[in-house]
Image (cartoon, rainbow, N blue to C red):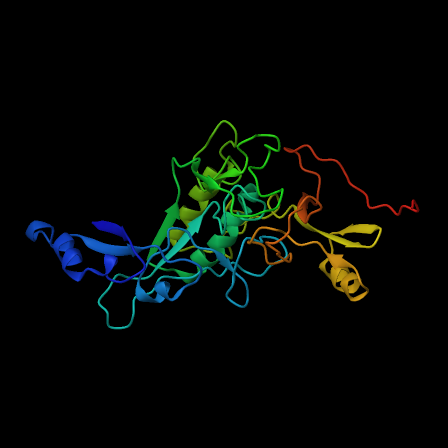
Length: 304
């Protein structure tokens, strides 16, 4: 049997005698105590601490909520120190996760039709780690606290005139930004079906090279999003879905509008901003059968 104790030290709670007593279980010696939670790609992963959920990491090892225009997720694996006699390695996957308060823009990547789970399982399926930890089930919403950021977008999304909107959901929020995988009336069963597919492949030792058409692997209906950068200079504003164009425009004096909440790595972040209404944001990049969309066009205006 396994028991998790919340701690950033190994053994859990830094209390070896407590851990020994739990693991002895009255002489049965049938319990393993594992420390929770490793966070942000920290050294805790290398000390045998497991992650409740794990962040996607950039090429430099920084955590990110960016699921589009970024490299492989490459989340951390929990590995015991050599010769420690501790538990085997573990890896984590989930429907979503948060780097800041979950209800705030880009603090949580969201399900993105299952793209977040698919990207996390890229490493799960290839790494072939003996233990997989997945969160969450029956955890649709939880944890309100005062907004940690000053921006006018640092409120509960969808509630702009709520007098309580500066008290935001920190842990898991609504259908899109919840880590919960179970089917619901609001969200349907897409994430549940994807989780089933991914876990079955993990148990069978299969990868997406073996079964590219599996729900865990096919991206035809999940890679359907585009990053939209917002730029400005005196008396002018411009939106683009091209990172290459952003690089050219910023070299010509355009200023990129940053996200006021930590999380994304494809957009700049500035937590001192008080107005986040001008972006950045994301859009669908294609027409979908099960979602109402309409095309947007970028036009030149000679006004002013």
